[in-house]
Image (cartoon, rainbow, N blue to C red; front, top):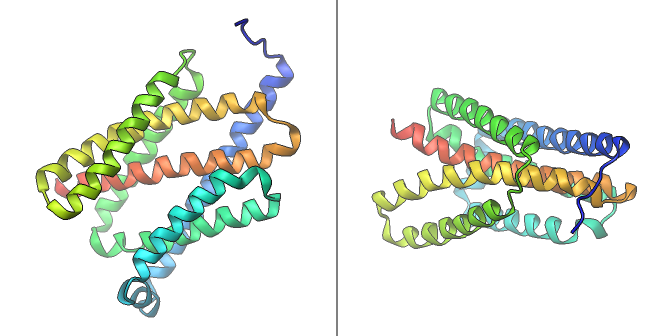
Length: 227
């Protein structure tokens, strides 16, 4: 296979695309944070979410459904619909994540967030600038993610502190690795897109990195809470 030669115009397009991805990701994180803060300050809303039978779990399943639907169908949606669904997901995630303000100390949350942001930034930059193909590495990380999901489901019944400890630390490594891999994948995506696909693709890329960041943050939050 001959190497792909990227013109200066394509390089600018790639840089513009990845900037758009980070922009949408930051917007989603801000929406999630604001939603969480507003939710935790409203006792009736918190009681509705966490006091109503099956409400919290229903919202979690709805989040999974939205991620699947956006990932599978985004290119067939209009730009407005894709944007609205992405923001609805960010709001919904903010509502479910509001519980961390009740479960963890503010200093723990702040420390975990700062470390997550620094780690994410370093690994995302590594994925963007590296010349090495991370496809094989990414496959290993995806297998690790599947292992984490299975182990988490098993531990739901076992209630093992030791297994939970292993899941948490392995989870940090997996999402650190996925951040680099997903960044490179998103960067390479730009060369394959048509102009009318860029906005929806940038939203899909933002959703991917948003999930990497949120999961890394949650894993680190559990570690910081143990210290």
